[in-house]
Image (spheres, one colour):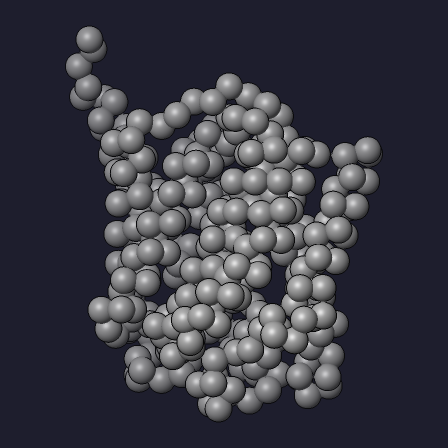
Length: 284
């Protein structure tokens, strides 16, 4: 009960910081890319002037989900509890930052604007993770993953993510249309480079949080990471567009399903390769 109370207090503190940063300082308020504002209709929340209230709820849910998913993996994470939480929150923050940076190469948004957006959201997510670690985490001896295996995970998961995400090309008659671009449909080298960065970060997250995955089944752990640790944050980040624009929910969900599948396939492939490596490795 004490941990629950402290978690609620921590969420409220971070929520206050996040709201102050985003709403109290006009220069830090999120401004969507012009291409979206020009092509898409405003959402019902914008039309009713309730988007700030909905945004408050949106941020609250993001923090609650962060605490819930950290709770699910913290029992087996290695290292100091505060650092484990900080890494978790910062990992999600970097994922959101990459989400903002996709607007640069897919939606023609200025780089400086999206770097600012990424930093503004990364700070409260990292703070929330650190607090979650202090409140809910457990100190455990650190067990490092060999560098070769880390590189293998990042490569395999990154390749699978990019390959499967690229099927979004098949879902749109016009891959250069606004909705296709919102779904991060790649048509240029810069698009693919951005997707590679996202896939590589998903692989990095798997290397860091693999020891904390809670199930005995490898399949269950692969699914939990893809849909939970990576997927919940990636999909929820893009739900922001649903607050601003009408008729984008299905696009966001569809892209989320494709990306979760891509990460899942990559993680399963990595675990298969890892098992084969251990099976054929000669004892010393």
